[in-house]
Image (cartoon, rainbow, N blue to C red; front, top):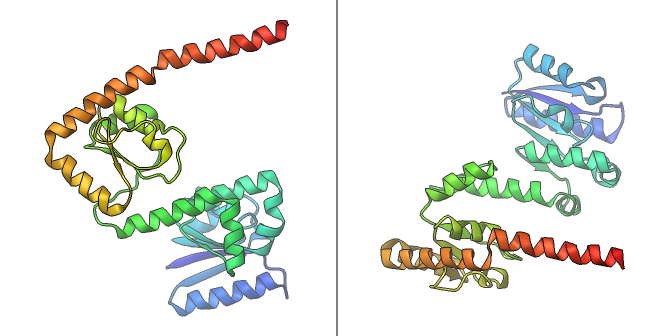
Length: 266
């Protein structure tokens, strides 16, 4: 594979030494690794031209902000290697941190040299790290697909064609996904946590599970018992329309705001 490797290559620095070492590893595996100084490539168009001219198929960057941001949006897969500057300096600048989060979302992998660096990264960018872990596990799971976010209308259309909606959250306030499923007349299987149990009454408006084994048992029961499915669908629909009406919610918030208006006048 023909790889682009971006790093800040000031001579006799730790970054340059690390970049050379990593390049040696990649070339030892039979890849062609073109090492470029990220400082010399400041625009996306320069990267695009380089990718085309060198017929590059993938890329690696040392440093999320200094190198990784230049690899976004070019249509080739890339991975990143955390640098000390990422976690010790750039993360303290709001805009840079935001950019690095976007880089992590697009990266196929991320390397941290120490457990401490990994923990720092996970604390700063929880969602991208978790998303990557989920994606890796999904690839290993037969029959499971990970679908990217979609407009609400498309999501509701997809839900209507599902046999059930599963909520496996370990923490919820009030799950909009559960309420939407009930309103769309789709059966709900939810983890038995306080937030879910507050809206799902077991075997009445949905099914609650406490562990993977119970989930499998209840899912099989739902598949084999059409009468149970019809009952929880009907009850769920009735519950959400009686207790979570859009119109009632609107009126409640409008009334609450009126109390603020009264306070201003006083």
